[in-house]
Image (tube, rainbow, N blue to C red; front, side, top):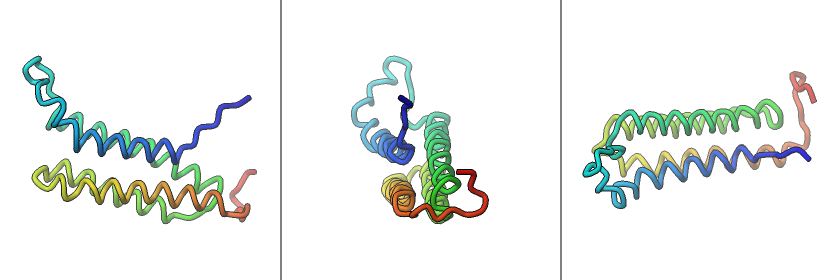
Length: 130
């Protein structure tokens, strides 16, 4: 039996994990610099997390668009959310103001993709191969 992964659920989970990292990690792991570990306010780690969320999300949304609903709206909304996450990393003093809209936007994009995939009624375009 083949294992099927719900890519939208994975994308939502990645976005929520990123939100938890950004909001709660500094509270619980503020003692890491005492041990020489610094992932709090580490730009490389922040960019890696945004890049990871982008890769997982864009793959899930592309799959839904190509194989099911042929709509670009989830990818546009997702891109806006990723840009908000990048803005959060660049303008760190605005991180709390940018974090929650970014995560809400990314989750909304995955939710729309999920809904579009479920209600597309097999309305395939001529580029479909299934």
